[in-house]
Image (cartoon, rainbow, N blue to C red):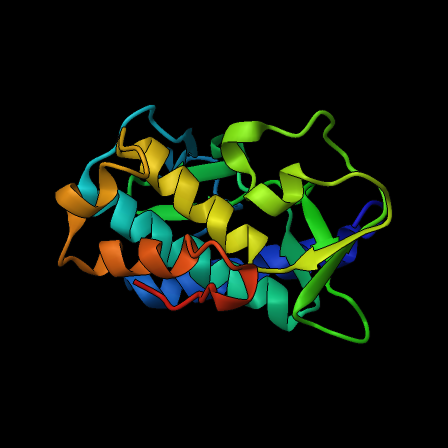
Length: 189
């Protein structure tokens, strides 16, 4: 989206509107004096409830991106702001990639903004990329979002079933972490 600041501004406005409705509060990003709304980076470790809310907010923003013809190659904690310790906002769109024009279930990567790719944040199929342009299923973003959630809970893939089983978050992560990219689903927590 380089050079497309108007489209980025529209995306942020749509994200804010969506999140305002979800949390039932008004977000005034132009208000300089509201210290409660001062954005914070994500903490290194988060509670179950915080991660569940983050997964919900970020998956809804990803759905907005997909509606507009984009997805993310991967998620990084540094790209997310925590507003008022209630709202999780995707604040950096540098990992944005377009959906394939002929098949909107796929993304097309023509030039990576980050290289080498961060191994802990990428889906396995992305890490196997050998040449550009690279076409893969858009669900690589779902996988990456699930990895971010696990990292914030300080859990490994192996620990997830025994610790989270039976929770909404467990089923969200389970759907996002399917090995086969075409089987992954993004259904909100």
